[in-house]
Amino acid sequence: MIPEINVPATDDNLNADQPSLTWKLDFDKGRVSGKIDQLEAVKQAVYKALQTDRYWYVIYSDDYGHELSTLIGDQPAFMQSELKRMVEEALMVDERIQSVDVLDITTNGDQLVFSFRVNSLFGSFDEEVSTNV
Image (tube, rainbow, N blue to C red; front, top):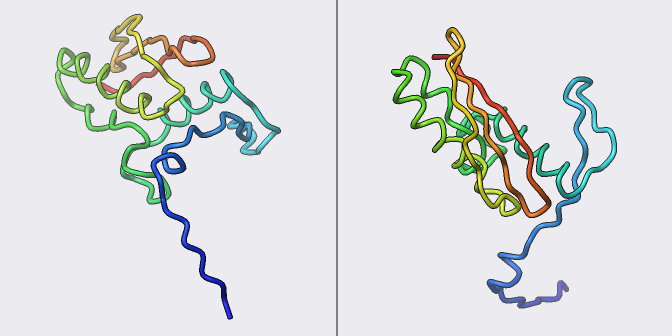
């Protein structure tokens, strides 16, 4: 006989804040190398989100990753306006990130380079992403 337990799903346990402690990923060696927390965990989350194409991997939700590859072949002026929106969209799903501020957008040959500052609950840091023009 299996006991039946009725635990109602409430907004409190569905929307609870997730802890920031996570595994530290060594992307060069392809290994897990300990644990990280707070600002370092946010930096890793930003890096990972900007390395993952949205909708390509069934393991991730439709909110995770970026759509920067859809900009390839567009006009540079259009790309500049969309790049900011797409990076914000990719990062703002993380509740630890409060805002993304544009620092610089430059064209370097066939690359569009977007520099920005991430403001999180644990501090701020600068990041850069580039895409083909």
